[in-house]
Image (tube, rainbow over all chains, first blue to last red; front, side, top):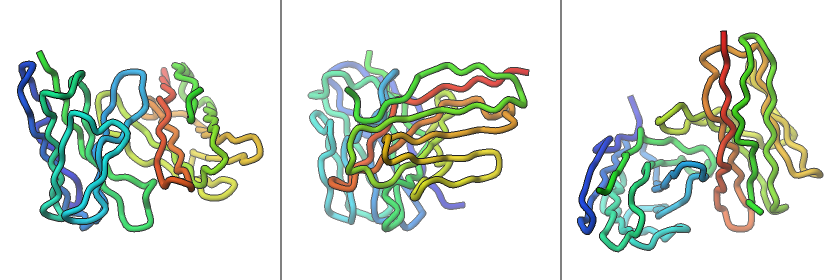
Length: 113
Length: 110
């Protein structure tokens, strides 16, 4: 079955540590996205990539980094520079010309202690 | 003012009831609209795309009113399994950017 796999589902880290969240898709989609969801707020875009080896900052990119070395993979690193990293992180992809029709992974819930 | 606004609810309705949610958007450059369903602590899943004045899919009907800048989602014959948060999402034509509402929570009781 095609889909998006995120790992880990739950992650606990100490302040000051970098963490990397994995996102892999087998839908053959070019476009991939990282969103952050906080209670009482809409999803906010962190980074997106329309094609391999290219990515752009979203609305809240500060303190995050990404890479897109393969079409299937779009990992997100939450660096120690991110002031409020505790959140639910969602990776998504979309087919060409279907920007609003996102397929999401199950999410990674990061808690910084 | 938020660019996409939804009543957070919760809407508590009995099984079999009809319930409707509204979502208002402020940017007239918005061109496409979507409803997503999100279960508690899970990922959002696309429920319906709304490209023209509206569309229907089984018990679900979405309508778009461009003049008043709102979209609505109507659920008929509510089931217990419809209990979830419904996210309104708007695609802005000028930036090709998706704007997510904060969601409306629906609780269907027996």
